[in-house]
Length: 276
Picture 1 (tube, rainbow, N blue to C red):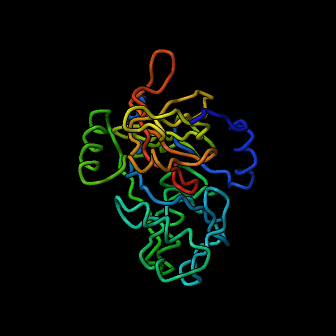
Picture 2 (picture 1 turned 90 degrees about the vertical axis):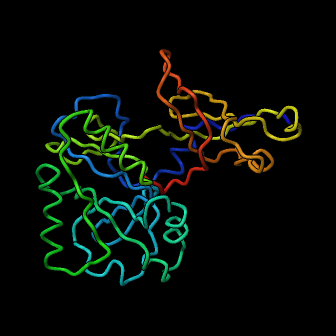
Picture 3 (picture 1 turned 135 degrees about the vertical axis):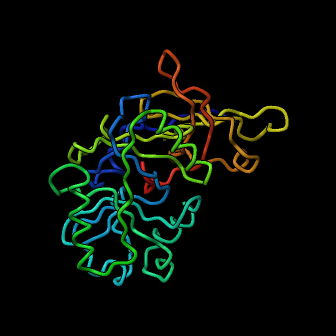
């Protein structure tokens, strides 16, 4: 099998993400000072932005939510996650990415972690939605609980407890900062292992029992680093690998001194509508 490349990652991203809404994104927690910040569970579902009229995915697609689902939604913007439950990300995707409304949405909740256009700190912004909900019956619209964390040790204990019960991780945020578009050191994701996305640019040839199949994926990440992802590939993936140009997620356990992801392994094929 020959190794080959495709057009640059930056070109593809500029074309396919042209109509994405401008949203907050999470930086990686790396022992920053977080005393007094607010922590919540990181839900592994489908990111969704309510613009006051339409429910839009982070990829810029208008979601085909049934009329009853969005009926009486507030006239102001919301940022949150469409979510069924822990370890059910694929089920959520299959429901909300369908192009026509259907009853599967009855399983889905819209869990809000910010009110982008409201003023004040995070709690004040969420209180605007809380007040709205006292006047409108929307049982499938929820505010994600926030709690204060007082130390890194408390954060670690909370992370371990939730992860042991199937949670993906945590989000920790500075409560005094307004909604910020893009990545910021004021909004951090906390996971036992970190993940990131890269674009499949080629393959290496398998050896031994994998002769004639894929030995590893050659991927380009956001830092323009070329990674070789062999660990984590199943026999089926080696025989039927993700297509050139597709996005995949890899997991890693920190960085080397030269800035390369340590112990990078293939995790899953990337869906652009999932949360950061």
